[in-house]
Image 1 (spheres, rainbow, N blue to C red):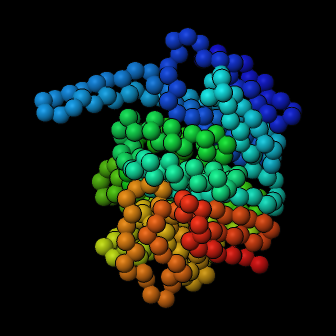
Image 2: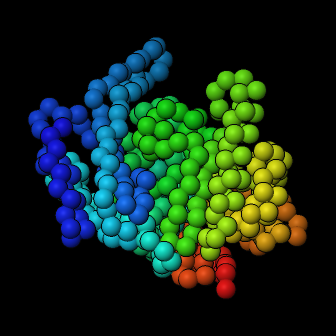
Image 3: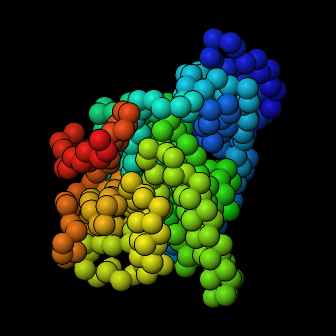
Length: 357
C-alpha cells in the first residue's frame, strides 16, 4: 500500500493516495479506534482471498480471508475534528474527533447485540445517525453471530459503515465474538482497557469468561487479573466527574430464565459501589433495562438487532424501566450532568435519566 501521509495543521489528515491495482478488496471501514487526546488509529479490513467449501445435501459456503490494515496517527490536537482519506476515493473518507483536554460538553451512544436480523440492525444504525451526533461509540458486544466466521464481519462493517466513519468506536467483546482473534484484530483492542473523555472515565472489561481459552484455572486467573486491574483503574479515576464501566454481560436482568447466569458480574457490584461508578453499560439481553442500586445506575442496551427477549421478571426494588424493544442510548455530558435517553429505532423515547448535579 502506497502511503503519502501529511498531517495538516488545520486538523485534517491525508492518509493514503489511492489503492494500486491488484490491492486486496476493502470489505470493512474505514473506522477509528483508540481515539485519545494526541493520537488515534484509522483502520479498514481487506479481503485477500477466499475458500469455498461444499458437501452433499448442503449449499456451498464461501469463507473470505480477511486482514486488518491500520495507520496510527500521533501528534494530534486535543478536542479537534480530523478528516481523513484512508484508501482513496469517497469510500475511504471519514472523520473523527480527538478526546478533549479537560472538562467538555460531549455526546456518545451505547448499543450492542446487533448480530442477527440485519435489516433491524440497519434500522438501528440509521436511527442513531438520524437522532444523534456522537463524538464516539460504546459497543457492548455481539457484533456478529460467530466471531470466528469471517463471512459475517463484512456484513457488520457494511451496515455500520456510515456511523463508523464519523465516530470512533470503543468496543467490548460479547459471547458471540467467542474471544476470536478476528475480533481482537479488527478492533485492535486488548481484553480490557480504559480511556478518558473530558471529565469522564471509561473502563471496558471482557466479561465473556466462558470463552476464555484453557482450563477452569486459566479462566479463574484471567478473571482475577482483570478484576484487580479494574479496581486499580477505578481507584486512580476518583477525581473524574463520571466513571463508566462497560462490558457485555450485565450483573442483573429482567429475563427470568437468565437470572443468576452472570455470577462473576454480580460479584462486581460491591466494587462499583466502593469506587462510585456512575453507571454500568451492558448488553447480552436483547431488550432495554435500567436499574438503580446503591447509587449505581445499570443500563442494558441489547436491542441492536438480535431477536428480542421478554422482560418477564424485573428485579424488585431496583428496577427503573424495562422494555422488550430494539434500542440504543444517547448520552449527553455537560459539566457535572449526564443525560441518558434510550430511544427506539423510530426515535420515540423509552427512558430518560438525569445523573449528576
